[in-house]
Length: 338
Image (cartoon, rainbow, N blue to C red; front, top):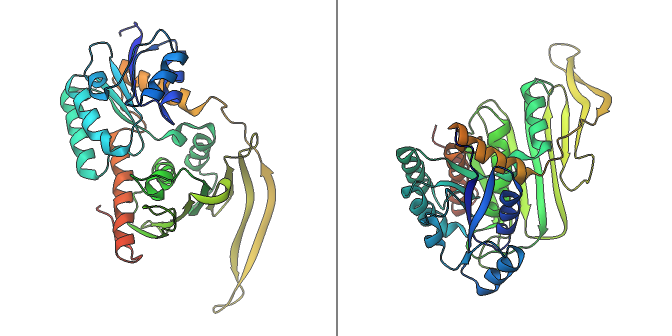
């Protein structure tokens, strides 16, 4: 196994890029050897923050540079396919900020290209790497919640309004990635409704995802909320989880609560409510992006498939595409390919 540091280039030093640079620069197994951004102002900021790292204007030049082994792409979704394709064809491993690409055809082509060149293709579904979501996965896998009933999430804040994607592709993508990680079965249909009041893209939307087992997910997202909320409930027959990502310390709480129906005769049933203890599990406090960066490097070193690889990115993009079809159809359910 190659023990030299992985040379990482980061394309995009705007909102998310600086976080990628900071984490890859801090890890003992990697170093940032090149940064690219088309904005002169952002290049100046990058040069000030990392004076020993060359900063260039061309993302394509970085993607094909001999000075990098891997490329992290933090640019608008419209540029993901072109930049990732250029990097993969030069044998570079690629980490792409969400969403993986603009449509499933582009994702399919990136997956095939990565397999052909034997490189790692990974999507930055950051929440999957949080201690909170990984603890939720652990509890679900252990059967602590019993049969899963529903997932309900509110993910709202004021901004950032975007021109290239709507609020579903910006915010709901996080919940779809979490669902893809938590729920073993694949979804069967998607419904979405939205409103567009300020900009050119929908700023408020509600998404419903249905599964064959009866499990249902409801996700509400907005760029037009006066407060920031990231509150999720996952309910099962035995227990319920509340995940509050804005909460500074006790992000996950497990409630021993529920309701059962006890039949009194053949035609009626009486609800019996359970109210037990509340359990607050200890969580891994490592920054999610650090965990993700380490996982990316480990997959490269050990030739392993990433937790959020191309197939995960494809499933999420297909759900987002179905949500868009539902919006165009006035909120009808759109079936997903099995």
